[in-house]
Image (cartoon, rainbow, N blue to C red; front, side, top):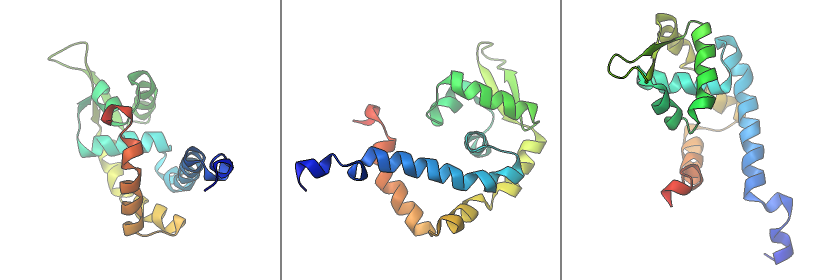
Amino acid sequence: MANDDLLRLENQLCFSMVTAARNVVAIYRPILAPLGLTHPQYLVMLALWERAPRALNELAHELALEPASASPLVKRLESEGLVRRTRSTEDERRLDIGLTEKGRALRARAVDVPRAVMASAGVDLEAVAALREALKPFAAGAAAR
């Protein structure tokens, strides 16, 4: 590829990834709407369905967010009755995030989300797995290098 072609917008990895990310979130939007969740809230719930309770800082780290960015998401989920924020009995500085019964019950309704997303995008599980693998070097960030 010629040097001039390397600078074409359509050849930029960053442009493809940003555009793809925007479009993926747009695919999720109508699928998550019946659950009453935004895409970032869905990610928080996924993490909590895997393991709860957990500290806000730990949750933020797993989601690649700053705690200051995760906190409003958690507060909104709490106002919806899906999670509960409590001070740790071991360390009062630590805020633990746990699921309410309503939050646990929502998981059963969310179980079809991944298949609905794949159907909407016209891809299968193998294509999604291959894409996730291809993105790992970029998702790991500078800390992994």
